[in-house]
Picture 1 (cartoon, one colour):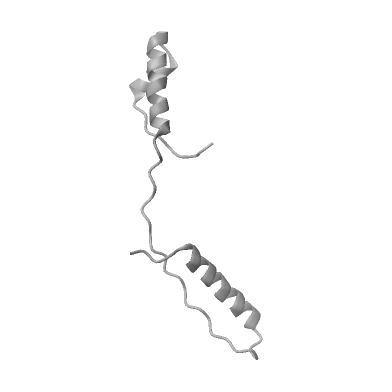
Picture 2 (cartoon, rainbow, N blue to C red):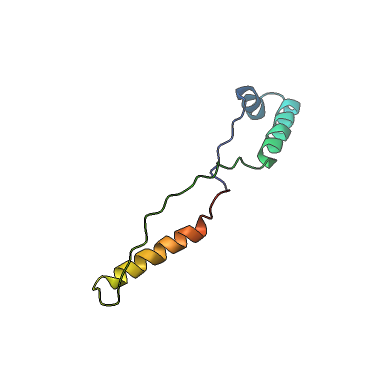
Length: 83
């Protein structure tokens, strides 16, 4: 089940929840048509990543810096540049 929100006119919802059977069925068809539409996607946003950290093999923080840079690389792979 999706957690997306859907705007539904109050009258349509009231019609779907009560009233005559023909009105309920008509409202359900309209609601199903609304639910069948693809959800709106948010606009892509550019992510500014922090700088990679330089390191040398003699630095005691090398493991931290390697992990930092690996994380930056992974996030960059997940967020390709926008045209």
